[in-house]
Each structure stands twice: as C-alpha cells, then as structure tokens.
Amino acid sequence: MRKYILKRVIAAVLTMWVLITAVFFLIRLMPGDPFQNPKMTAEVRANLESYYGFDKPLIVQYGTYMKNLFQGDLGYSMKFTNKTVNTIIGETFPFSADLGIRALVLALSMGLVLGIISARNRGNKLDFVCVIIAVLGTSIPDFIMGAILQYGFGIKWGLLPVAQYNGIKYTILPACALAFYTLASVSRIMRASMLEVSQQDYIKTARSKGVSELRITCKHQIRNAIMPVMTVMGPTVASVLTGTFVIEAIFAIPGMGKYYVESVSNNDYSMVLGMTIFYGVFLILCNLVVDILYGVADPRVRIGER
Image 1 (cartoon, one colour):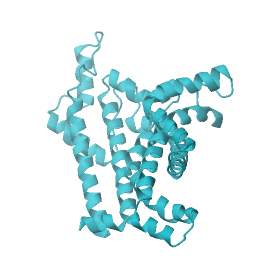
Image 2 (tube, rainbow, N blue to C red):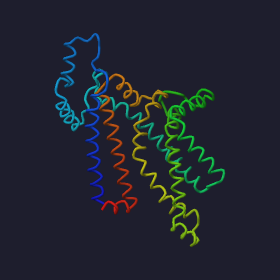
Image 3 (cartoon, one colour):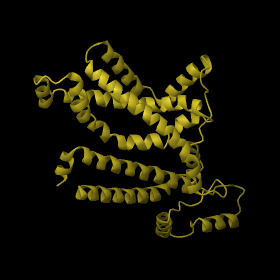
Image 4 (tube, rainbow, N blue to C red):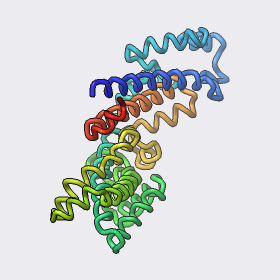
C-alpha cells in the first residue's frame, strides 16, 4: 500500500510541475499586452515592467515565479489595484466552494439513487423516466438549465430568488443548475455498472443460495458497482467545487468565475496564471485522493501496480 501511495504522490508532484511550467510559458503567448494603455508614458511602463519582472529574461522570470510559488505567493494582480492573487482567491473561493459542495451533495445522492432505481427496474416505466432524466441532464448546458430554473421558479412562480447569494434560499437554484449534469452522469454510470455487476457469477451464486434481493443489492451490487463512479469523482469534485463560471455569472455569485474571465480579457497574466494553477493543483489533488481511496477500496488495483 505504501508503494502504491508513493507512486501516486510522485506522479502528482511531477504533473503539478509540468502544469505550472506549461501554463507559465503559454501565458506569455497570449495576444495583447497587460500594460497596453495609450495614456501610459514610457517611464510608467518601464516602472511597471520592472515591478513585475518583465524586464528580465523569461527563464529568470520563471525561476523567480517558482521561488515565490514555493512560498505560497501567487503574485499581485496587474489590473486589480493593490490586490494579490492569493487575496482574491481567498475572498472568492469560499463562495464557489460553498455552491460546489451543495451541488455535489445533491448530484451524488440523487445520481446514485436514480442509477440504482433504474438498474433495479430495467425495462419498465420507472427505468424509462430515470433514463430520460439522465439524457436531459447530459444534453442541456448549465446556462440553459440555469435560465429555465430562473424563469420557472423565480419569475413565473416567484418561489425562489433568481440572483445574488444572501442566504440558503439563494443557493437552491444555482446548486440545482450546477448539479444537474453531474447528477445525470453519475446516474448513467451507476446504472450501467449495476447492470454489469448483476451478471457476475457471485451475484448468481447468492441468488441460488436464496439470499434476498435487498441484501444482494446493498451488500454486493452497490459496493462493487460504485467503483466506476469513484474513478470520475476526482475531476468532478474539482470542477464543481471551484465553481462554474457561467452559473456564477447568471446567478450573480461573487465566486472565482468573474475574476477569471475578466483576467483573461484584461491580459492579467498574474491572475490567469494563479487561478489556472490553483484549479489545476486542486484537480490533481482530488485525483490523488480518489486514486488512494480506489486502492483502499479495491485491493486488485494495488496488486496490479506491483
């Protein structure tokens, strides 16, 4: 088990380094100029380039950035005055994470339940309804679902607020809109996995011994069928917890999405680089945790690594 975890940690660290390096150099290929301003004098521009280290060779800039990054410093924003990238992420990530946690809990609980119900009632009307929900969830984009929920529950029926983030009731619609795609994906994966597991020999043996269907489902089928769901949870958790830019814009949520989009359009290299690295490292760590949990849950994975 130690060898398995060590290999996963080393792979994660190398992936982080490759990600940070690639993003740092690719960001310099972005069209435009972060200091582009017709009113800016040559002296002011030179001072800004010196302040941000743009007057030094690119490899020196990379070394300085990596040194600061190891100290947890993502630098200062080039557009938001006197604000560090760390400060902006610290102020906005809690909103994105709060929304993401609510959406994730809803998506996982409902997705697993729908997948199990669909598999247990294969071919009948209940299965048809669950499949339709899954197809709609994977077909309708988040922003369309968000607009539908806003119109139906907010404008037409007036049951819930359509924007802002000032209380629990403000989180219901954006959480549902964000969760719908993940819910549908989990439902489809769980249904397919449950049907596959139901054909295994140990399930047939359990039935031949007279074990009840409820016990077979809870003790054998769900435990084994949930493994494929675990494999996709790494990127799913990362993407949901860091927030969806479009959903945050539609529901006026002060999350990371607003700053990320604005930083791209404003050529704010520090902000784009910092937020991209934050998201990428978060995704890698989520995948690492899922890999370790996967190895703990299924010993065959550890054995295959030897």
